[in-house]
Length: 117
Image 1 (tube, helix red, strand yellow):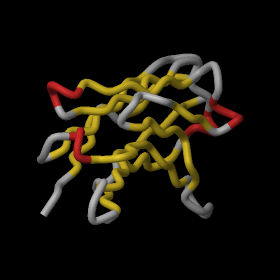
Image 2 (cartoon, rainbow, N blue to C red):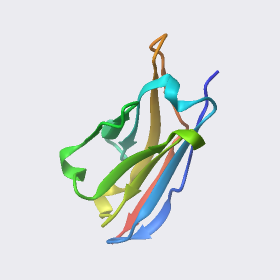
Image 3 (tube, one colour):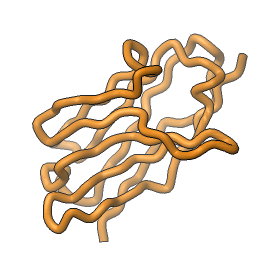
Image 4 (cartoon, helix red, strand yellow):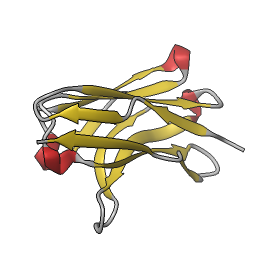
C-alpha cells in the first residue's frame, strides 16, 4: 500500500510563506502525476498544483505567481512553496499521486494551513 505523508502546514500571518512536503513510501518515479489539492471549510476540494514525472507543472489560476510545485526524486518528495499567503488560502492541503500502472490514485491525510489576517 502506497503512503503519502504531508508535513509543513501551520499558522502564518497574511503575506507570509510556508513550504509543504509530501513524501511517498515508494519511488515517485512510479507516479505519472503528483500534486496538491486543497479544501477550505464548506467548500469542495480543488486543484492547487500538479507536476508530472517529466516535471511539467500546472496551477490553479488564482495561485499562479505565488505557489510553486517542485519534486526531488532522490527524496521521493514533492514540495509546494507558498508565498504571499492570503486568508483565502486557509484550507486543508492534500497530497495526491496517480500511479503509472495500474492507474490508481493515492491521497495523503492532509495538512492544515491557516492564514491569519
